[in-house]
Structure formats: C-alpha cells, structure tokens
Image 1 (tube, rainbow, N blue to C red):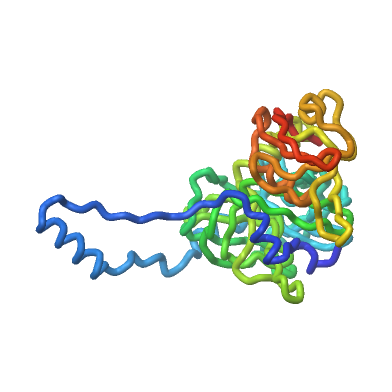
Image 2: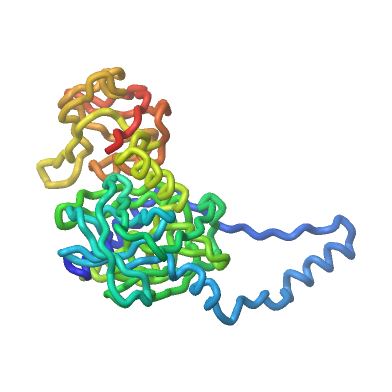
Length: 358
C-alpha cells in the first residue's frame, strides 16, 4: 500500500448517504415574564457580546501528546499509532497494519526506529494493536471520554501525514455518532464504523491511526479516513472521521488481553448477503445467500433467496446500507425486517445477535 492510500476515502455523496444519526448544538436564552425582562432579553439577543477568545497557541497540548504518537512503517507504506501503555502496546488502524506482522515505529525526535510486532487486528472496526519490542521511553497517551465530545469542540489531529513526522492540524468536532463505511483497499475489507466522530481537522495520508485530541490534551479519537469528492475522486476538504476513543480502548484492551476480540458490542443479522441487481443494473436490496444456524435470521424464518428491503424502517438497497442499519442497532434489539419473497413483500421480526469477534 502506498503512502497516499493510508487515508481511506469515501465519495462525498456516498458519505452523506451513509450517515446514520448525528448531533448538533442548540443555544437558547431564558426570558423574564415581565415587560422589562422581555425587553432586556430582546436587546441582549440583538446586540450579543464578544465571543470568548480561544488560546493563541496549542503548543502546550502538542508537547503533551506528541511523545505518545508514533510513525508506523510497513513494507507497503506508513501510518500513525498511539501508545497505550508502558508495555509498548500501540493502537492503530487495521488498514495501516494491513497484512504485516512486523513493523518499524518511531516517535518524533527519535534518532532511529524501533521494531514492533502485531498483537492482533479487528478489521470490522478498523483497529489493530502492535507492540514495540523495546518500550523504553514510550509515553502512554491520556485518553478522554469520547461520549462527552460534542459538535463545536476544538480538535487537533496529530500524526505523520505523508511521512512528515509529528504534524498537527486543527479544526472542530463537526458531528458525532456518524455511521460511515470505508471502501476496501489492498486486501483490507470494507468496514462500517458506528458512532464515528466527524471533524474538520484535516486528515491526510499518513494520519490514519494517529490521535484526535481535545484542547485538554486528551485523545478522544483515532483518525481513520477522509471523505472523497464525488467529482474526480479527490479528497473532500474538512470532512474527516475518527473512531471514538472509548471504542478504540475497549477493542484494543480485548486484543491485548486475549489476542483477539471476544465482544464486538455490534449487532448482526445472522445471514450472509449479497447486493441484488435489477435488469436495469439498479440495486434492489440485500439478497440472503445463507443464514447462520441458530442466528436471528434463521429463528425469524428468513431463508436463502429472500431479499431484504429495509431494517427498522431504514431502506437497504444494498449490502452497505444493510450494514449501516445494523451498525445503528444493538445486540438483542428486535427490529422489523421487510423482505421480498416470491414477488411479495412481508415484514418479519428479527432479534439481532452479535457480530462475531476475531
């Protein structure tokens, strides 16, 4: 994989269609019931005071976090990673690790890289853990609670874009709780990321696996992909996505403890599916190829040949849309699944299972 492929891209029009959920900020003002109170409120609304200025520099934040962000090199390219602990465990993207089992990692300012090896990878969440053979001097990052991130927060993306070690870009949190699908690339399967953080901080090739940081120096996300433009396939500026830190830490901890993921926390239908195309080439749903024995689909009576048209009221014209609908659900949820069978539509209730671990 080349350097330029280290940030995976999704078409801008596609990315917009892939969004499930989201968040916003609402600002309101209380008013007094008296006439004078109402007048005062109206005056305050018409003539707002000056905005609170932000800091002139984030140098102290960068100094705090930079020693915890490493450059990762493989035979096929490069990316970034975040140090998790004193044992030298480093979280990164599964697509950065790729098929490699051996790596070279380097902290900004290091005179030489150090070797590392793969601990485990979980492509469905695009996360992997590698471990430095010599952890001496590696500084663990301080992780924040990504559930507290909200639209409008200032964010810094720290990583190694184009191999430029220790680079920093600034933006804001644009939205939270996005569901986005990464395209497959160089043997890495497509992955649908639930609850992704959208940011305007530029994410460039080589940033993948690095740190999305709050102004308090807390890692709140792992930058993973930038949206691509529908015109010409170029990168769309100011639209990037990061895996929430809470999810990254949970999956990484499972990999470190057991070598694989034992609890994905993600819903699954229990069926193998493929996109169905009509005579005109348009997508017509997600066709059931096989059902998992004992899974939710089998228990609900789904069978090969059925075409899934919607899940929980969300239209599923193809397998990507189906995956995104499931990403918004939880294991154990009961959902209404609309299927087409023998030319007729029918609704069935399915209790969702859990997406298998690695």
